[in-house]
Length: 132
Image 1 (cartoon, helix red, strand yellow):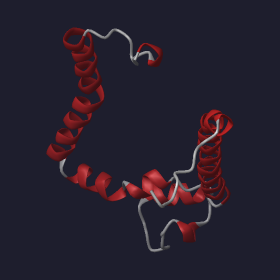
Image 2: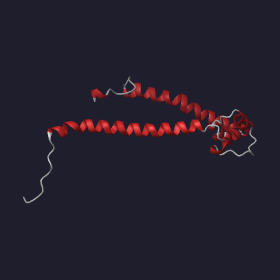
Image 3: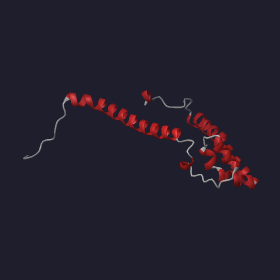
């Protein structure tokens, strides 16, 4: 009635849709992978550059000085220096953090496996997509 017709898709266009989705997915993966790789390469090339790590030469922590002498600065040591000093001064908090770590890292996966095995009844880590 007087108007616009809906565009019809041909059989070829319909058959090419899965191919287009696969290409878009792969190109997206490659772009994201290239960005992550670029960031990783930049971090590796600048690992010994103190100005990117936020370290001033007034820091006297022996761990940091040792890392600076090795020319490669471990960002993990720098990021956890305050927590390390706090835990060293407060042993009760250190024990508390250790208990939390044990609960999450050791008992967490064990509880999940028991739940999957006994409650859900799934003995495989992932469901088979073809049976869905």
